[in-house]
Amino acid sequence: MAMQACHLHRLVVVVIIALCGSALRADDYKSPYKVEFNFKEEELIGDLLHGPRGEWKEEASVPYREWYDAAYQKRWKHWGPAAKHFSPPAGSAAKGPEWMRQRVIATGLRFVGYTYQHHHVPDWEPPADWPKDEKQTTPVTKGLDCSNFTAFVYNMALGIKPTGDVHDQAVLAEAPGPGAGRSTVVKRIKLPELYEDFEKTLLTGDLLFVKSNQGGVSHVVLWVGKIGESPDGVPLILDSTGSGTKDSNGVVIPNGIHLRPFKRGWWYASKASHALRIIPER
Image (cartoon, rainbow, N blue to C red; front, side, top):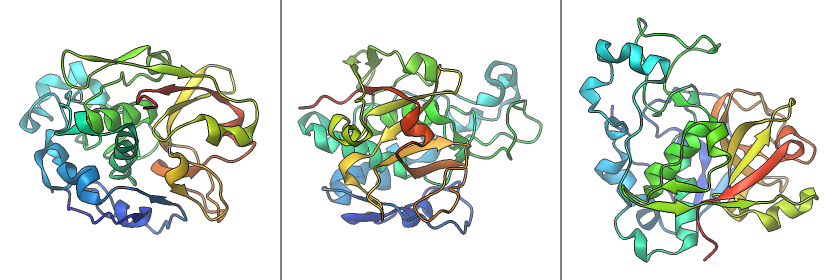
């Protein structure tokens, strides 16, 4: 089933976006968070809504007819096919950094509601007889883990393809793209000491890395920044995780890809390691 085109107005209500994904099931969760874009839908992601770039069967490096070929089981294991390297979107060279940042978030929001899975492409859904991920404790459906999500979003949005391994992604100095045969410099951003200064330091679309309790980087999120809206004014991030973060209403956010709050003292803030900036300031 191909994705249906959703209407993104200047004010985007996330629960509406979530109903548009091809992998999504009916869900009682109602997010209190919104994203307000400064660009019209057609200018920002029209090619994803109406063109082949947004076709879910075109996500991988191999044709869809080969996704479930038994010959690939030992090679791919539970990860499934690798993502293809998308070309730069048409006309992107003439666009400014703010368009690029907001396009990254708008692309990521298309996958809200997909579950947390150790897959390379979001619409990979292995059959029952496919090798299983021993660490997977929830039902195997379509979805992505944290770093494959951030990598796929940048790839689909801009044709920039970071590695999907969270530890390698955390130390990137450059990323392949936009498109084949090119590379983009990645800037490391030192985080502020004060929670209040995160919004001054980070820009929409920055990759924010989070450490585990053992001290090593274990998670990555997309910083939503000034275009995010929450009822209590808390900054928002967009990520894929299996943890049960609560939203501003005290409701547990389901596992997988969702907008989540960046609250003072919570794991995301207290264990934040550093950020990477793929899109230049100007």
